[in-house]
Image 1: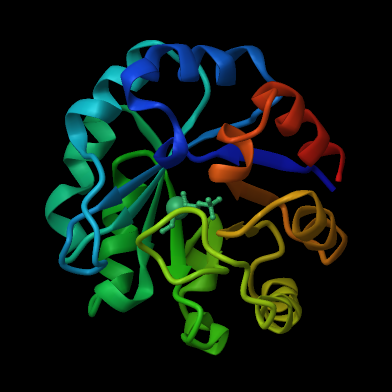
Image 2 (image 1 turned 90 degrees about the horizontal axis):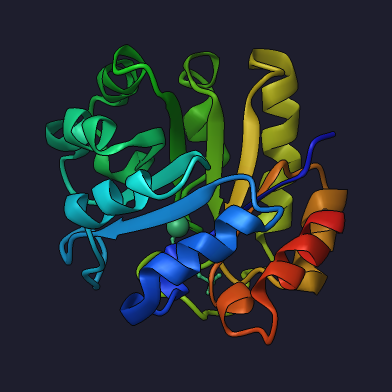
Length: 216
Ligand code: DX5
Ligand code: ZN
């Protein structure tokens, strides 16, 4: 099974964003995770289209855009044009999720759906055949540096069984509180993609941390 690492720019030094992206470019990271927060769906505001456009200009790594925003349908095209390769929307923000997923796919991107820690994976039963990835939040979205929520493992087991039945190609990504310990257990549990923010960027040698995370 392929193991992918997506460092989260949320924890990068924004005064040196170019250097942080260059570090990711030179590392074994597979994707760059971009956390977009609107202060409405989540209690924090991060960054949006202009930053993503600039990052896209200086990297060949796919941009994994995690939209923590209300009414994401309005912005799918804009994020696609800004350079996203993958767009993740929250199940909790999409009353017409099938339409939202179709918009992402029509823009030529991988569609991914995210669940907050309290949202049951069973809600994805009917959308699974239409998406390339499920993102499970292992912290409450909005902030980096939080503690991993252990119950995520139960959700992974249930989701894996659902994916086997409905769409065996679908990837599982986990986001929040990832370090060497939680990361290796998540890969062992069958997770495909790990998002890591503060653990990577607060380490002495971020590229080495990415490499070690990838080895599980
Ligand atoms: C949280 C974001 C995460 C965040 C993870 O709302 O979705 O991507 O950057 O940060 P860490 O790895 O520090 O928990
Ligand atoms: Zn994220």
